Amino acid sequence: MPSNSLDWKNLGFSFLPTNGHVQADFADGKWGPLQAKKEPYISMHVAANCLHYGQACFEGLKAFATKEGKRVLFRPDRNADRMRLSADRICMEAPSVEMFVEACRMATELNRDFVPPYGTGASLYLRPLLIGTEPTVGIRASTTYSFIVLVTPVGPYYKDGFSPVEAIVLEDYDRAAPKGTGRAKMAGNYAASLKPGVVAKKMGYPIVLFSDPKENKYVDEFGTSNFIGITADGYYKTPESGSILQSITNESLQVLAQDMGLKVSRSAIALDGLDQFREVGACGTAAVITPVYSIQYRERKFTFGKPDRAGETLTRLYQAIQAVQYGEIPDRHGWLTAV
Image 1: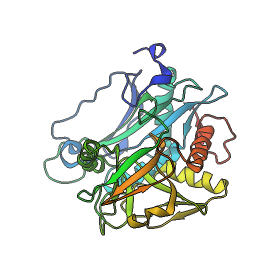
Image 2: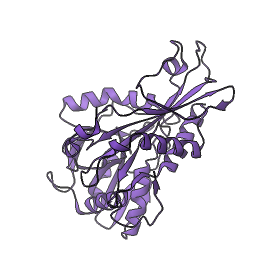
Image 3: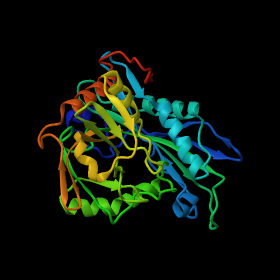
Image 4: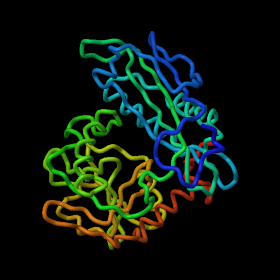
């Protein structure tokens, strides 16, 4: 698909064909070179470890066209760190931070024409992927891997963009086990969230809020993103848990919140104490921040702000992080990497 045929301001969040992806393979104890691949297909053995035993983890980050016409990546080094954490948890060989960042640069450069123009509100989504490829029928870690960075131009994750949604807590489902792989961004964690997501949508709720898997008393995270809450007395609160994925967007928003004078708290948040919040949001790379108007928890419905408009603080945070990403304000924290 030629990039000049795209309607940049009306992109959804789905895969669109591009110029290709970048790939490197690990074998005999070392990584091979990063190579550009045109065809969007990979060939692997039918007994490849990732297909049977789930050795697969991934990342998500974005590239932006700035106000000055540059192309930049947002915090790729932190995504590299997180992939290495995920890989360690499931015994995979991860690329170095330097290799990861270079692969992201290469994939963006290969697809320069697919980085949406400044002012369209769109971005280039990068999906670094690490999979075990050795044919195995016994349960063990692979000794060969493929590291791939594919890209696609995207618009808002939710069709209404930065608009409030309603969520529900479904206590019959856990996203991850208390001492399991919740901190790892591995494929299986997302497979576990599919069924409750379908159930919630049939009930009229776009997103699920998972409770902690040990006691089912505390906020864990949304199906696709971290939980953040803003209190009337100026606190930015987000859960601290061993089963929660550490969101780089959340990490960045915490810094911006402190810049704005908010107090940041990372601790357990009781589900029956959600009424402490004036605003609630779901935050992650894809949607950045999704304002949450209500959360249905058992027989109680908690509401936050207005159903048709995001709260003031979440709006300021959303605008602030986007202003950094699009180069509209100085990059005070050194988050942007030039392509």
